[in-house]
Image (cartoon, rainbow, N blue to C red; front, side):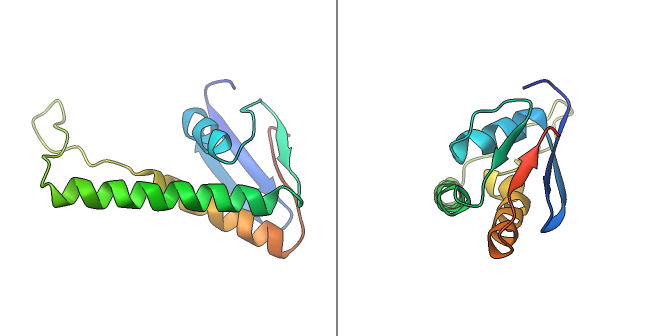
Length: 112
């Protein structure tokens, strides 16, 4: 997958846009190869949704454990705290798209 932006499209929803590295990670989670173009068919959507929901749940658990330990936040170059953008925050728009696409029986495509 090239660097830049990846636009996920479905006739059921508005487009969802990610940087290529984030899109690649999400595609790997849902079990698709991170090619320049691809499709999640309606038949593939339930499994993709389940895998993404499991990854989000694991990310939330890890986030809770991190805060329970009172671990210090990453430090930015200027000495300030650098907030972490979690998988959950990144994945929720994609998850919403997948669910809406499934409800409307429409595939999700990218790179087209």
